[in-house]
Image (cartoon, rainbow, N blue to C red; front, side):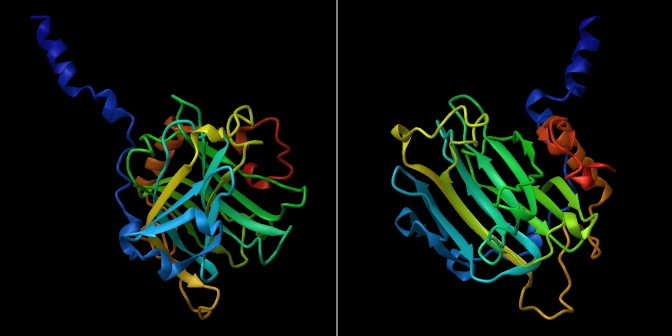
Length: 294
């Protein structure tokens, strides 16, 4: 008779493989925006010889001679920006693969930036997904990062996964396969990027800090380091759009924000997969990050 309750427990207990996956967000914003080919929305920015476009997929790589980067053809003042990305397995320490918004070229040394960055790793350890927000003044010795880092619930080297930034005048939402992993609300103009930004992607050597604070460097015995991008999406209000252009939303609400189900999914991800939150770092000077106060 003792076997019967054990059998029932086996049936109702979630498997360990399913337990690591986030609950459904209930809404999929990527489905609202059309995909585009690379050349419909982007151009090479640097490292042209380290970039290849085949069947609507862009491949960029880093070796001992160069990395590579690309940039959107127009700036935006809000929008949904996404791409499906596949990373290289194995030893990638020191290597950054990025998809981000920036106005660095328009405001050098005094720019805004919203980052999705994959921090390379060593054998047997997972990639770290770093999200970050800079507001004015980064790049000139006054860098104030607002990093939140995650270990993903899947292996990003096995398949393409969709990574996106939704930026509106009210909030920034980072999404992975339509799962919101972070929401950065506008609490003041001083702590929120409001100037037009372009969309960028790149792969480059950041050995000084990328992997375990620079402990492990890029090792070019494993070159080239390759990243592939496809399913590009960039929709919203460009810098040239009329004033009445309505910002896009990551939820069914036209006013923005997230649904209750999306919030619950985001909190689940942050509970089980977040590995760093700048607001919880007691070594940081939080007088510089007042959005952490409340």
